[in-house]
Image (cartoon, rainbow, N blue to C red; front, side):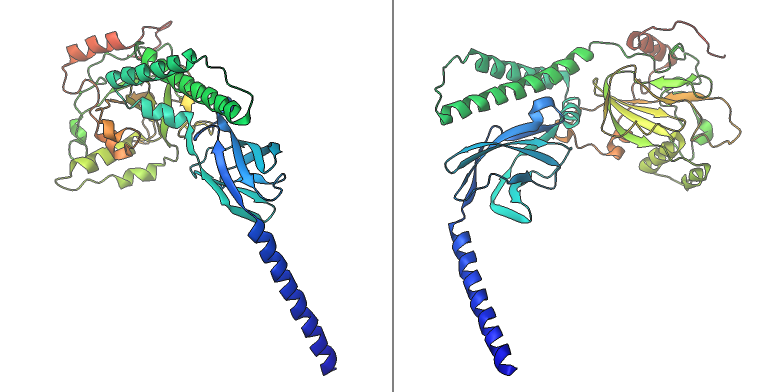
Length: 394
């Protein structure tokens, strides 16, 4: 019995040694490397700009490999010439991880790793609307200049692979420039329009107690005691719409009256806590950053639809939520209305795209410190007069 076991162990040892030699030989000859991409950028959900052409070099057959990462991707093998392999990779989901690699079944080809700069329309849009008009115009001029240079390039490229791929890369760069120039131009153009009224058929109020800077003395010990913007009185569940093209940057839809107990009312309360108290009084709410770089705090809303999510772009006039009284401390309060402060972007260039929720709350609201006559004159100049029927209750 011992002899049989010894012979068996000997053959297992020999087989293991042979397998190790074979594995070493295979991997010694396996050399896979990333060569080039049609672009260093990839833009999520942007037609074919969410797709890139990739070239790898390999000493083994990688026809069935796929491009993988923690992002969701799809891969199409386009062909190969000797040891050069060509793929088309599509980025399916919005993703932050910039690293990609080739993979086949359980094996990851680590030497094939490469990096792409991932963008999406929402991020591009949100970054650009944090810039002032002068910066935007300068950026657009640079984009147009680059576009024109690409358009004027009539050089005929040969059919050899290197030149053909260079043509693909140049066309890709050209289309990326067009994409960003279109977004930039749209923002600049939208800034020439007035805001629409957020509640259709209801005028922007001119009553002294609901316009900006109206006193709120009864809240002076736990807020800044000033009404930051307007109230629009309207029946329960009246639709509220986006007053401009913009991107939703915050959604609060879990208000309960118990949250009122979170308001801090201690002596000598600081400014930051006063702003947080005001934030509780606004729930439920949606924050919309507009093409005019402002941030609108739509407040006292009813239940917000599931389709309204943070970091989605919405066009002007889109119905997004409905009126209620969430955040008003009195449970028996029945004066249903929309409260909407508009915060003024301070144009801190280095903070574009990186503002925090606290930053937005600390921005000055439009018309701060103006008297009632100045406020009403300003609102007539800023909002489009679209009222078809005046149903406001006075």
